[in-house]
Length: 366
Image (cartoon, rainbow, N blue to C red):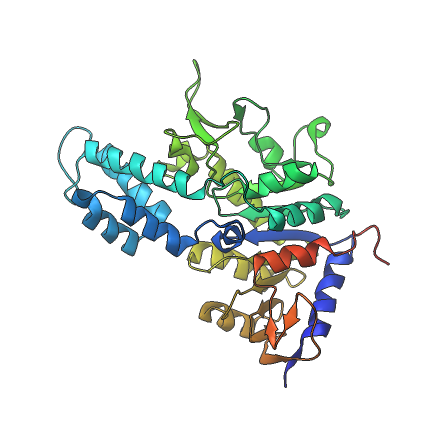
């Protein structure tokens, strides 16, 4: 048995054509490679390479043991716990703060998109999201810190909402992110795409108002030198409830549970078990939710295992797929831009964006 690439691709398009569908896109660092930015492995290497010789061993150990966010959270925890003296892992408070700032600066530099970059993939993505006419808004969940999605929307004049309201120092409005909003007068129409940056952004920063608790705001450009706001932190639960991260995670959980949801997962390595479980559990608990994972090359083992036991998890890799619980290779006639030379290509984010851009809007579909 083999999966027919043309049939599967046509069915994929049909899923996107129904107005009743709630369509979500979940993207990771692999998507940003389409505009020349590093993936997770490249970002980790860049952090280590940019670290001074005196600190390289400790940072290499952290990066090897933890992910980027966990490394920064650990440094912030050390800075707080050793404020009055002492060391943890040979690091005192001043050194922890310095390393935090240096790593944050390295990340911002690494994911800043230079002028003149070919943004075609994200322009096509924004074109699709802007034309969509679903009953529910298109929701884009991203783990990336860069501004590629925003630049795509700007290029096509599309409308999107990211949870912040304002232009100069826009504060986060969790009431507008919640599924049930207390004031319908500020409800947004479904034609406005939602962009949820689950790990923050290079243009978020901390602000301490004259009165009230400090908060995260979105500014016009990169928050150079003020990067603490772009990562989840170690801070206690009560304080973190005031930050965007928890509200955005809640939004992801609610969105995955909505009826008739199709989640397209692209550019994501499945290296974060927390997000993996959210995606897989949504499919297992909600039979009318479909999770379509697209792998650039080989399908990760953890995805193969879950897709084999859950029929509404589809895993599409370059040389094989798991569809309806059946693992098999590809066959069939070539589909330009999608299936060529016996390889399924939608795991390449540029190819996926082109595929989406050529889909008819839900209004146009029969």
